[in-house]
Amino acid sequence: MSIRKGQIQIGSILALVIFISAVVLTFMVVQSELMPKKPFESSLKAEAKNIYEKIEGSLSVTIYKTPVFVDNPVNVNDTLIIISFTPSQEIDINSISITDVDGSPIPSEFDNGTNTLRWYSDLRNTTGANPPNTFYLTYLKSTDLPAYIYEGLDVINGTTDKYISTDDIILYFDTGGIKELSYIYHPSTSAPQEKVLTDAGISFSIAGLFNFTNGSLEGKAIYGNTTVRVVANSTKFFIDTNETVTFDLKNFNDFYIESNNDPVNNITIIDFYNGPLVDPSASGLERRGAIAIIGNLTDYTADIIADTITVNASTFEVYIHKGDYTNALSQYYSYNTTPETLLGVTTTITGVFEQNYFDLASKTDDELKEELNISGKSLLIYLKGSE
Image (cartoon, rainbow, N blue to C red; front, side, top):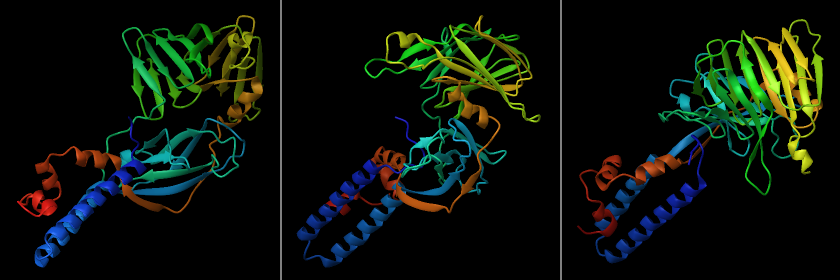
């Protein structure tokens, strides 16, 4: 099971309370057996307190939390959020993360070179007790944790299967490009089903050999002149290229094109759609939903008869969504806009760190005594009052 850095585990706190209670009970028994030996009893209590404090120090960790408030001017989902954060030397770089107000980790990525933290999130609903435009920047100090890979993004480079997938989409790759793009439909009463959205796939004019990389926020398929970046926990991916990209889609009935008149950004949306991706009716399960191409498209051709899109652009977004083109408009508006952010006052929380608990529990008696700096003493003396 993946354990997120910086999270306080309530189960571990309860386990520690039970452990300490057992130790206290043992001391009470020892006290009753050794009533006449007051000096030894005092020494035992003092040493017990010393051991308790050392165990507490070995298990506990302090989490630093800073609230992050995100402006939501256009009511968008899958939005890229960026904040600036310069960590001090004692902060563990690998512990820097973003959580929601409930403490659940959100896939994020800290760039130590630019001192920026990036993540994607849904900002569509900003009401209620836990508004989605409130987050927490969290980190630890002096923990030396390994790099963390979030769940929800699979990068597979097998002998035959080569793909990147999230919980909602999957892209299969070969030497020509993306050989298949599918939406993963999740029926309530059966296993997930892949709904293929492409016919011949998505081809690059110059492709060939490729390799995969797996980061905490994006999985990448890298060709010579083209990179496909798949965003964790999302239904979107990006194509970065200087070459022509051709989408050969499957059975779409309509398309919608909207261009931004802004001469600087010139953002265009091309949306092929055919009703909801998830429809409870039997015939609706075969409907293909929508694919939106969003970006600064220097040259493009959309053919609804042939179900193809040909695009020339340095970087553009491919967004898979339900419904007609109105569902993609928020992505269109947010493509070139990063929401404004405001950081609040940092607070601290001290508690049991689950990994420290497991590490301590796995030690032998000798290793435990060395950890507690009581190597020259017998634990039996302190717990039973006799050698």
